[in-house]
Length: 88
Image (cartoon, rainbow, N blue to C red; front, top):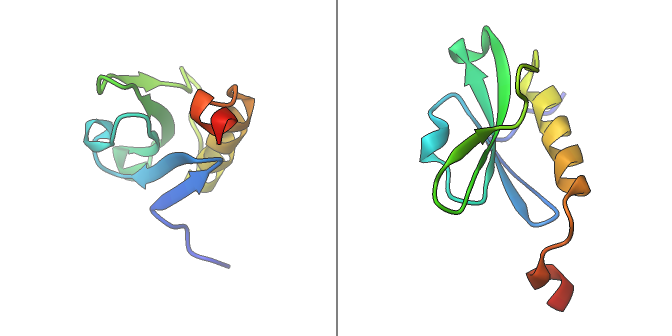
């Protein structure tokens, strides 16, 4: 069994797993954030370009950070390719 890392990158998007505040994440990044230290589950957030945090899971939370990470990766795969990636 491998340990879950605190930082991941998927298709050029940053994903952080944190027990801290989502406000500490950089703009443009995704977060898998512990609720109640993880005892109440894990939520999925995205930090917009102006630092605004959006809860992507709505009322749907994950039991483990691994489940949340898998969900974020699926979301990223649904995003249209950025203009920067298309030019490169």
